[in-house]
Amino acid sequence: MQTTNRLFFVIIHPKMPIHEKARILEHIEVAPKRFKLVISSLYISTHAQPGQFVMVRVSNELDPLLRRPLGINGIRKDEHIIELLYEVKGKGTEILSKTEVNELLDIVGPLGTGFTIKKEKPFAIVVAGGMGVAPMCALIGELKKQNKKTMVLLGARNKETLLCEEAVKVQGIDCRSITDDGSNGRKGFVSELLNEFLNEMRESDFNTSTIFACGPKEMLKVVAEIAFQKKIECQVSLEEKMACGIGACMGCVVKTKSGHKKVCDDGPVFNANDLLW
Ligand SMILES: Cc1cc2nc3c(=O)[nH]c(=O)nc-3n(C[C@H](O)[C@H](O)[C@H](O)COP(=O)(O)OP(=O)(O)OC[C@H]3O[C@@H](n4cnc5c(N)ncnc54)[C@H](O)[C@@H]3O)c2cc1C
Ligand code: FES
Image (tube, rainbow, N blue to C red; front, side):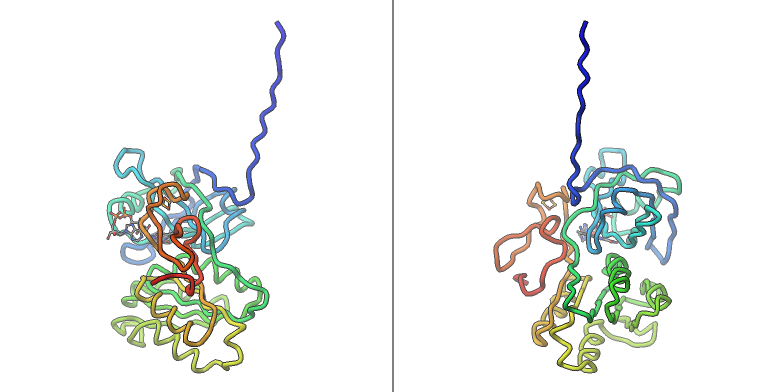
């Protein structure tokens, strides 16, 4: 009998997300109900861009069935590691918080369209509110790598939930923070820090600056309005409830000036001026 050797080729597009079983290397509660996951992931760490996310399967049971979206908090390409930073909100993240070092985490990624760092824009202003800081850490790392002059503005409910300030400062990056209750010094909203900082800047630098923002929608709306008034480019990362995370279910659409767009695929990062808030 004649045997035929068949060769199958799998062509992976450089932007294509894949499904990985990634080993948990560290899992730490960094603040009440807020966890950092350090996971080993060859493909995703190699291909991820700041602002992209992964869909995490939190349970082997049927409930919860849907994966949960989490922004990529750190990309350590040389070590083949990615980091996730998340808050326990409901059942899915509660189950995730119980996973342990050495377990395999079922993830799909990297997903979505991340931030665009432009050559012609040497100044960056990063604005993060609450857990919106999660994907911004990867962005801040990349801005530093590309020698952008960066100011990081962080806002949180209180001192305990103000994350990543030290991690930013130890890299020698300018950082200011504010909390809703004043428990970390300044009391107020992060948009106030943005207004103040823009007043200190030379107006001639506005058109060579980009504001990158992530946080609650109300905060993003205010940041977008400030950027619009000052004619500064502004990219915002949105959060919507997601079922598939890969552009198939239309469950995450938002209205833009050019029609409905999918947050999981066209975003999560959008030009703030394109959105119909
Ligand atoms: C692109 C993207 C990136 C994200 N990155 C992060 C991250 O880096 N860190 C982090 O802590 N969270 C992040 N989130 C939010 C996170 O996905 C939700 O908090 C999580 O799915 C809640 O799941 P749960 O089962 O624990 O809660 P559920 O029981 O499903 O819901 C609990 C509460 O969370 C709200 N919620 C559920 N899903 C979402 C969602 N997709 N977006 C916003 N609110 C939601 C519900 O309205 C409800 O009030 C991201 C969301 C998106 C869309
Ligand atoms: S979550 Fe299914 S299309 Fe975006």
